[in-house]
Length: 366
Image 1 (cartoon, rainbow, N blue to C red):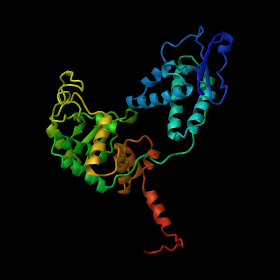
Image 2 (spheres, one colour; image 1 turned 120 degrees about the vertical axis):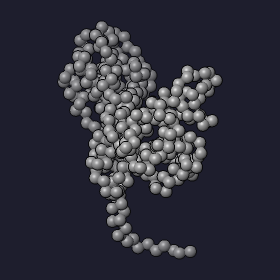
Image 3 (cartoon, one colour; image 1 turned 90 degrees about the horizontal axis):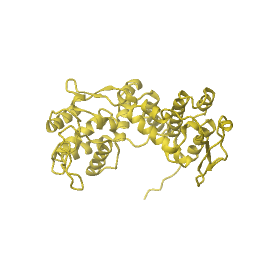
Image 4 (cartoon, helix red, strand yellow; image 1 turned 90 degrees about the vertical axis):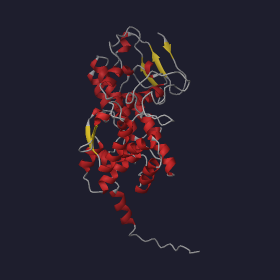
């Protein structure tokens, strides 16, 4: 028998065992040590990695989130993700991972996404006969983390929104026109920043002004109507961008040139890039975030993120009397429970109710 041991309080101890022992479920030795039977000694390996098989079943944006959660599990185990024997995880390991993440103060939604990712991987492992139906059933019975958190970020006031738009319109470069259009689709369309980055020119219809979201969360398409003012901002940008097919929002170099690599023909080291026409290269989701950061600074307001405009979009719709299902459809939420988290009306009611109370404290006047 051989044994390899990694140091550290959360080390994963991989043990090569005999055939008789390999039939036993892996066990958790101590609370802070995740132990998984390796089975490398003569164990048949799957023709396909269950992790990659599970990721292939997901939309690209979901793949990124799941990879992040699996990396968090590998950190707990103390091994690189590509060396983690995922198919050897059993219910005690999954319970340990849940408890560890809860102790670290992770949000319930993050913990439960991790559990969902592990169930998906182990479901594929079961398909490859790497664990039994009974072992997988026990994994699915691991209870989720309880609780909830308030939505991250903040609401954007109309005064701040006006300041953001004014900052763009006071910028007489093409970037000012583009960024005003980005603000329009973020707020009026309620788009996620990844959805904005993925937009193509062909996704915009002028009459009536509508955006087709082809790469929504969960790989779901939806149509998003735009107001006349938002469409005007978008039309102004397209007039500068041109009507060549490709990405709707493209880079602009410091000299104000619009385009793909034509906007910046060399990289930071001075090496020449392959020539690409306008539309071949789009802004990244991180670049969309950077647009908001710059324009908030230009407008002299507190920093904000693209998601702050999205949550404001949902909250303003509900404040205006749009029903929950209508706001859910426009936001592209899979569940009305998610949409309801951005409903500010309950908070306003609570504020109005508590103002009816009187606390007999005398405030001294100067």
